[in-house]
Structures are given as structure tokens and as C-alpha cells.
Length: 191
Image 1 (cartoon, one colour):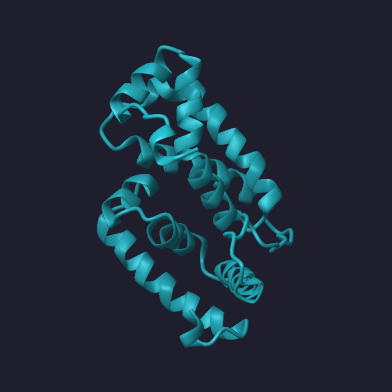
Image 2: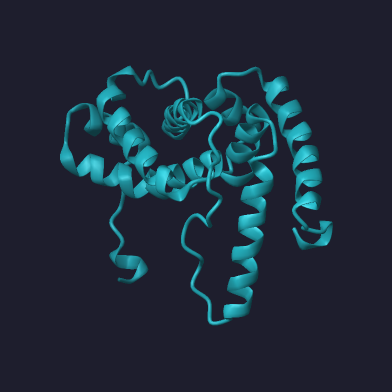
């Protein structure tokens, strides 16, 4: 499939309208747009790729069920991140006290250089392990802002926290993450 063959996805407003109208092709477009991001978010928050798959599906069901509640005061992606985050938090509360496996999440990018791929997998595993040692509120802010690419304001909206609080949580979380990375053997210049 060439770049010219890729389907043109509807605008966000049009996508919301189609989802509310129950059009099945809209849900396919939604999954294509948000599937990888929601799965990555779930992986980073819970640290378990298998659970992340289930949580991603749960997120899609919740969005499909609750799309009528979306008021349009934020971007659709911000609302979807909030739904996904709430589902992850419920999952983590249920699993509180249990060890969370830290297997490598997501597929590695295809590369001819298997050594680079292996190094990337090790670093990703170490990052995931180190993130588990960052306080949850700070981890959420880091994942949404640094790993998912949301702006500070979008992160604050997704977490339903004041902007200043989110900026502080990101700064403190990154400081805690640096310390945690050193504990798991990642040197500053490797990141």
C-alpha cells in the first residue's frame, strides 16, 4: 500500500458525529487512529503488555458506550486518554500489592541491525522497570506528556488536574525517574 492508497480519515468532529450515530466504519477509523496510542499508554501505566491488551479493548468499549458524554470542550484525543487512564487506574487498584510483570511491551521497530534492536529492547525494559518506581501521579503525567506527546495543557485536562500541578509532577517525576534509571543500571548518556 502506497501513501496514496491510505484512506483519508474524517476530521475529529466528523468522527465524533459518526461514532454518536453508531456508524460501524467510524469505529474502525477510531481504532486505527487511537489503537496504538491507547495500547502504549496502558503498557506504560500498568507495565504489563497482556493486561494492556485487555485494558485497550475495555477503553474502546467505554468510548463506544460513552461517546454521547463527550462534550467537545477538549480534543477527542484528550478525552480518550482520560478514559484510558481511568481504566488503567481501576486495574492498578485491583492489582495493588501484586507484582506487575515488566516484560517488553509493544513490538520493536523493524531494523536490520539486531544488536541495536536488542539494545533498544533492554533499554525499554529498564525504562518500564524504572517507571514502576516513580509515584503513580507523576508516572501518569510523564507517560502522557513525554511518551504519548500530549502538551502540558492536554495532560492536565486528561488527568483533570491543574496545569501547574501537572508541570510540577512532570518535573518531579523526571527527577525520580533519573534516580530509578540509575538504580536499574542505566547511565545518563544511555537515555
